[in-house]
Length: 401
Ligand SMILES: *Cc1c(COP(=O)(O)O)cnc(C)c1O
Figure (tube, rainbow, N blue to C red):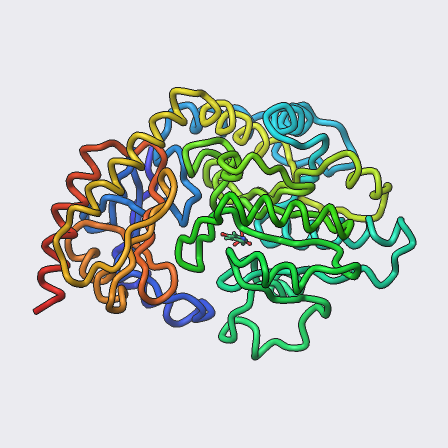
């Protein structure tokens, strides 16, 4: 059953007139999707390489997700965290059994997960009587969100400058540079936060040596290690957690984007040592971990955790990198990434390519000015990669002229 679709033009006009103009939107109105294809109100189809920015891991119209949402909606949508409900408890258990973590705190978005992680890290130091141990070390090109705490850890002038003063105590080091990290981490460091694969900053994977080195520095200075896996976690890189390749485990991990298949959710995974610093009433949220959203997250986590599912992500991801590397264009500078989190760095700005993609049935997105970022639904197939590469080859050739 689909609702009647109003004509495209008035919708774009309503948006232009009445929505705060913080987003540069594509020139069409999306109405529905199937698998890895999105459709607009005029009937045009687009192969989706963005997935709501690494959110719609199971694509569109997944029958199990639809059924889960319908059943959960007919049961309970929301009740408050003052009451026990089954789906939240089961999700917490499943997340812990599949990770380093002992406990989970649920929230509603990535930013909220980062904000909570900052509070938990500071609370651990506070409980230990270390009142000056409040600094959080972050890295060049990081993206951790846009609230006053998370924004302080997102070192980009355009995002930060108009909104100062931000949370004090953020300290910057260079990504993948252990000497720089060593200079930034000391007895006043409450935590170090890092994306094991940077997303917004341009698809930069951390090296194993860097993550190992950070773990050692954190242990040495009694600082907590926070992995922000909001974009790279939950199967995106071909393992359930992006940090698995390194053998390093964090004290805290933040999750969000894909975890509930498109519904808003955030989660902070913690060791018992961190969680034991938090007591009733010291942190909380109204909506988080509700029965509807966590019912869906249970399905998503179960599906993505299957070894065959993760093997599929690795196989198609490797194929994507291989096929992108074969494109013969002087505009291509680098192809990099892990699993289905891939960046194509160009010598020119990618914005015109994103625009051209819309005219050619491709939904593409940038990561910074010079990197095209591929974070498709994880159910994408090799045949879709072939279609992408064929179209992209033509678009790159046209760009050169
Ligand atoms: C998207 C993102 C965030 C912020 O998540 P929101 O849900 O947009 O608040 C934080 N960290 C990383 C790594 C992200 O990719």
